[in-house]
Amino acid sequence: MTVQATVDALWRLESARIVAVLSRLVRDVGLAEELAQDAVVAALTEWPVKGVPVNPGGWLMTTARHRAIDRLRRDDRLAANIAELGRAVEHHQEEQEEQDDVLRLIFIACHPVLPAEARVALTLKVVGGLTTEEIARAFVVPVPTVAQRIVRAKRTLADKHIPFELPPAEELAGRLASVLEVVYLIFNEGYTATAGDEWLRPELTYEALRLGRMLAELAPDEPEVHGLAALMELQSSRNAARLTPEGDPVPLLEQNRGRWDRLLIRRGYTALLRAQHLKKPAGPYVLQAAIAACHARAFRPEDTDWPAIAALYASLHRLTSSPVVQLNREVAVAMAEGPETALEMVDEIAGDPALRGYHLLPSVRGDLLARLGRVDEARAEFERAAALTGNRRERDALLSRTEI
Amino acid sequence: MTLNGGVAAADEQLYAEMGKFVEELTSAGVLLATGGLAMQGTHASASGGRVTFTDGPYAEAKETIVSFALLEVRSKEEAIELSRRFWELVGDGEGDIRQVFGPE
Image 1 (cartoon, rainbow over the protein chains, first blue to last red):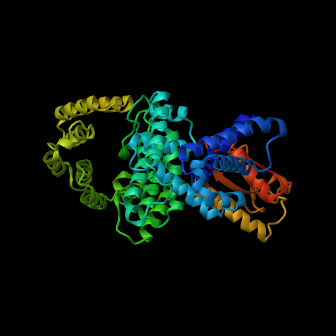
Image 2 (spheres, chains in turn red, yellow):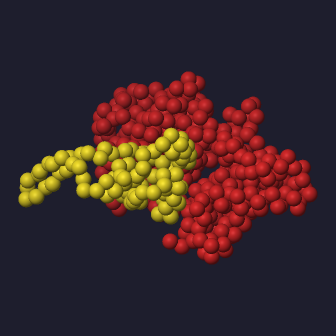
Image 3 (cartoon, rainbow over the protein chains, first blue to last red):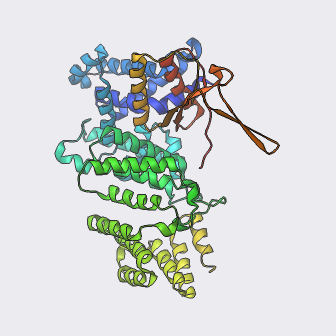
């Protein structure tokens, strides 16, 4: 195994911690990451000669910390941070403090002053430890685009003097929502890619799951954190069943449930229970996780508790007033009460401008029409749905349904 | 990651350190499951359509898996680095790092 491979692996495992601790010292995420990278360069120079140290992660942290201390000593602008310097020199850092630093890092990378795309890129870079190239590949965008997003994001954080702090209590809910949104965006791009030829990008769902599990440990008193973790675990549990061997998507009710990953389902239930034990009102992620859990509990599609799902969607709709949620509720009602009722309900909301261009609307109508035996109308709806999706695999799947 | 038998019994300090390590990996989302396996078991052998069961024990303690940890990592190198930390805590002994194949 080459030193380069060892260092790469260590970076992925340790960089969040290192960059977080350094960010607190130098009060600048961009600079912190730079200094941490210096430590990596030092490792690549030293280790091939002296051998990999006994505790390579600790070596990187210590070296990076020394770089930060040097920088603090030399740079007057940072001198105000002299108290931190004293503590850093003493090399005394409680583990809990380190954990809090990581949480601060997540909050700052997901800060609402940054546009969503920048938040996503910065989080993957400094918390996930991904390279700019990896992020660009995962999102099917050019490398310079991602590089620029990250540079701009770091500059914005510095220019606006965003403090490296946990949000004050009155801002916590909004700031946490921003963090969860970033994680779920990453997850969804991996789970149902909106661009490109492949429908699933496991590396992104993996990163999102990792972030979600980290958050669950860092902010254990927030039900939505566990709700999101549960939702992602439960959705991921279906990965093996969601695609045909050719890579085409398989609808939920046609999936081979034997291939659902029981370990992930169990982790999802556990996370959902943790959320529910906090005895706070259920937020959107907890509700969505509860819906996913209803599906996971049904060993056969016909065992699905559709009335429960419809009720959960109704609660979710009260929180979000999203027409997409409304649409999903109607699908659940259709399953509980039959396609006729559901089609009437769908047609009531079909004119909502927010649903214009949303490919699942014609797709749902198509399903309902097909179940009512109105084959020609169903075919037209599937064609319309196919024309609206940007993902090739999904388009193929929809077009194959026109052959009713 | 597996650990073979023949490792010195854990003392209180190792329990505490291992507990912290396990907690850290769990919170990092890396450690999915751990478990211990009894040394004694039942050996199954199938030959020509006949299945025979015999009681353990097995040949050599240090060739027998006594515990496992299921890790989700992106590369063999990451698994090796985590294993390095594990062995730093445990001391002398043997084990293996093997890839688990899907359901994915």
